[in-house]
Image 1 (cartoon, rainbow, N blue to C red):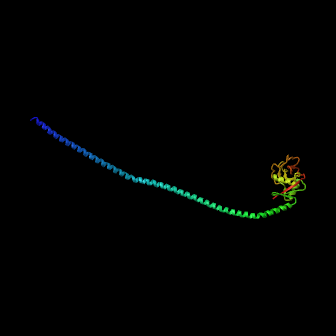
Image 2 (tube, rainbow, N blue to C red):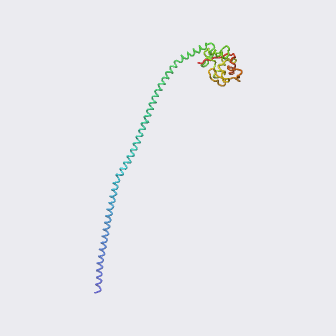
Length: 269
């Protein structure tokens, strides 16, 4: 009997100990769960607080961003407005210049139209007067043809003498007739003289080097052009006194001014 009591005592102690351990475990689990719940609540609260803080930050930054955007847009609008105003001013200036130019062109056009009308009227009047002028010219040519010894060629009249005199007297005769010794300035005029006097005759012309030996000048003071002298001419020197020129069949030739030749006078219109 004495050996069983200890066993029963042990078993009862074990049960008590087991119940105590289970209670301790349950308490620990309850503590852990309460801590876990509290931690989750704190985390949730902290999370909500963070979200709220973020919302507050965003709410404060939004107006600032909006103001900056408005300022930037206003700056762009001002710059565009200035550029547009400048473009409009330039357009007005160019438009005014073009308008002024168009007005000037219109004025010039009107002036040209008036000038054209005047020219048309003048041309019409000239056409009406032309037959009358032509008749007068023909009448003058008929009168010239009746003048003793005078010939007409282009715009000049020519008198060919039938007698012979020296160069000085020949020129004096031309002066008395309101003319002077002929001045031949072209091959056509030289050919006209040769046709009128014939190939076998020679006449005094208004060419001399009496002032400066070797410098041949016409009676009007102009110089002689090259290409008119005959072969070997001029042949005179300072000793033989050949200071006056005649028109030969093959060109000009120099002779003493005292020699007698026919002469030809020219009256230019």
